Length: 104
Image (cartoon, rainbow, N blue to C red; front, side, top):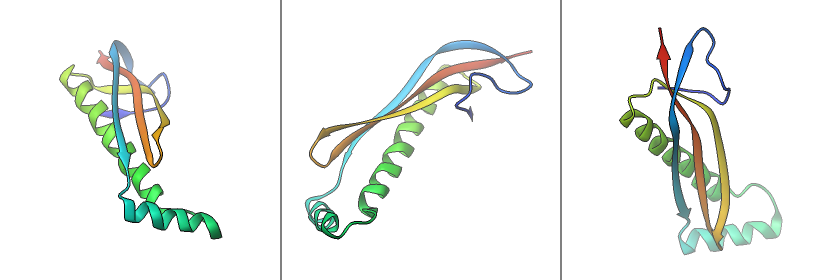
């Protein structure tokens, strides 16, 4: 599966199938959340949250690809990510794009 954030793939003629998406809502456990809270006192990168968001993006992307595969897509174009806070220490990541087939 080819994944791009452009509206074309060089050298390929595309036929649009459908919008596809994937999402997940993630949170850290209380212990990591407390440690991350303490990190805000001294500043710097909060690696527990970086890891959480990287994992969330990977899960959301996997779910989007699975949806495109069910439609027999060859690629997903115009991929975009969005994140929103659901509650304290929990975030949603959604990824969406356009599933396409290659046309000969």
